[in-house]
Image (cartoon, rainbow, N blue to C red; front, side, top):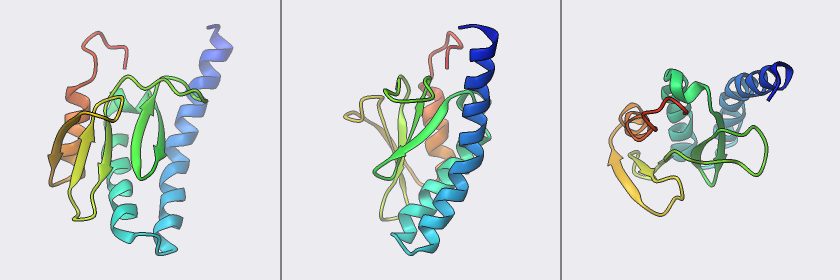
Length: 124
């Protein structure tokens, strides 16, 4: 990847981090499952405070927050995802979405579980 492509990807990631909370506030305000919408917003806030996750492209699918090393489909998902639950708790799933890594009471704890599963080599 050349410097211009790298800068473009960095800008796309940052723009996405800025845009996602706005989008999810609109979803919440339209009364589309306020508990789940508020949960996604809490996950976004917690994840945005984590520098290693901030380098990844965030996206949501079916109320679940995923992180990709690519900025466009097909996304490359190598780290766990986090999702709000209807009871206000949070679940962390493995990169393929099948394995449950754990459930937590707070978005911050869920994101801490995601960060704990990041590769140690600094790639994520």
